[in-house]
Image 1 (spheres, rainbow, N blue to C red):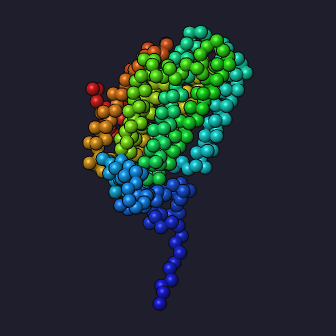
Image 2: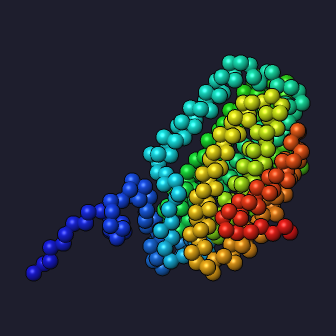
Image 3: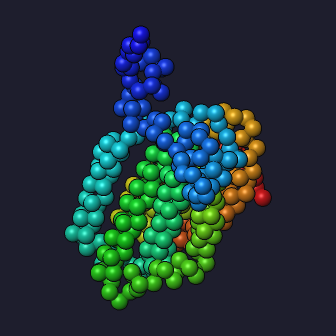
Length: 331
């Protein structure tokens, strides 16, 4: 006699919570078919580069947890709500650009500030693009779909700001055709002393292959360093040099940085459920933090009218680690 099976009211992995699952849980939890504990993640027999890579740098990471799928994004964003949120953000930035363009804002900027924009703002699309690439690596390598989703939204944030920086570069080139906007940024990124701290930090982060170390390098060091130096210090300097448009755009970008901070702290807390992870996380923070501090100091030190921002940015980086339950050495 065949036993009749009763249909489940929800997905099997959500049955145990004894309440109706939320939209976030339905579309975000337990989606990685290649992270189910099988010996071969991608179910491909024989030698496979992708299998070997994922097994080495994800499944055999120095950071472990018995249940990565129990991690939750504190904002519980899904694709639908992310688009609603950022559609509002994009409409806000579009409004800023239209308003200030109609007022002839870029034409009114001083020559000294245009020098700063050429040297320290428009080359930033290279910096933000490296952040985008590093975030995309986490999308592919994180051991749970709830972590992958956070990294995917962070990747999209970076892509949006690469586009906005490129747009502003084109606007400045149109307003000042005698300048090198849109032509000199790569050489500046590769050679100018102000950028070399960020460049070293990001080039090293892009070859941190263990997924958890890549997360530490990017989300606990590089993203806060970009927020504090390239966005926050730049916003303050811009206000003091009558570039309110840039200040408001940078402050809008910082809202994305705040969301990255929230999910990063939540993931560190999840990792620290396993006490043996603490020493490894602290070792990585101690190794990576000096690169973040050097990047902030080299960059912010070149900005006009903000003499205290390099030290303030470095202190903010230390506070970010402390609020995540980790320390930053002074070495």
